[in-house]
Length: 399
Image 1 (cartoon, rainbow, N blue to C red):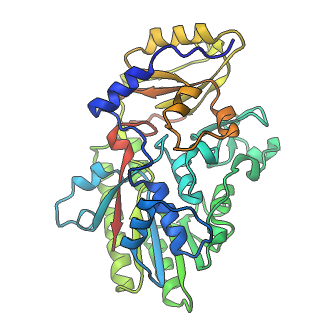
Image 2 (cartoon, rainbow, N blue to C red; image 1 turned 90 degrees about the vertical axis):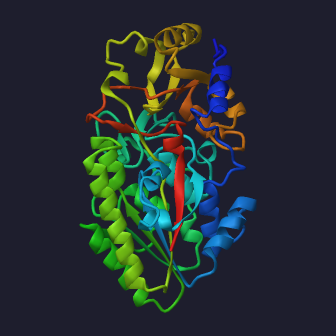
């Protein structure tokens, strides 16, 4: 029996209408537009650009040196907490929207490819790969449960990441700057096209490497600087924590340092992949091994705790719909993959067959501050991946 679809679309539309959730809309300036604008400015030929991408490219302008700074987890809510004269807020030129799911894996892959999640096939941190019969934690490129390198199971990067990255098509000299722990990783090599890279031990060292690269350049450059510190602090301590304030101070000071060192020689373009919200422990549901819901599935839930994806077992679709709604009626809207596609949640184009198979039969969409997942490896307070405004809204900062 196939999914029946049992009427949660009106509930989701009502949440869009009252503003508690933000409906994905490709007509509103977004991070895919930004990726496409930067691609054009970096010489990528044949790149599709719409009105918003053209407008973003015009605002950024033509510059010999471009520095793209990605601050993981820097939602507009954090920028808006700054005083009007503080650096990030003072240099914010417009608001963008993240992709859905508003999470690191799909959002970074959209920035790397200029494609929507429905096209590039990386819908979540945990992505089920039907070609291999396993779920991968895709950015670390490990099998979800054993934590072993996914390549040990035969998984190849070209199958895991079917979207073509923009980096290899850029005509500028490039440098990718990122923390040492992810420097040279499978995903970093995929997203950068094996461009030269620098792994930093401290963000100060990363900024110094970026500045040195530009200062000695003899041709136009593209520098990508990735900083995960705000996101990590949000996960561990929550949005309103001292840890987040410290991370924001660190990021702000290093971007100011970058600006002062370059002295106007380069255009700095800064944004985020997503924001976060707090989810109290009592609103986090962990589906343990004996949970009856798991017996109705072919494979464990995947994607994101705030946007779980479900592959129903044969003949269990109706029962799964009933059991899920009985437990989570006020917390999640349960949509069939077809319904999510019809609403263009994963992008304006029809979802690719590969993405559809990876998502499975259903997608749960958090209506409030709730999560559903398998037991997490570490306790978390901050989450992302849903459609809450604080998860979706991100800044475009230009210096």
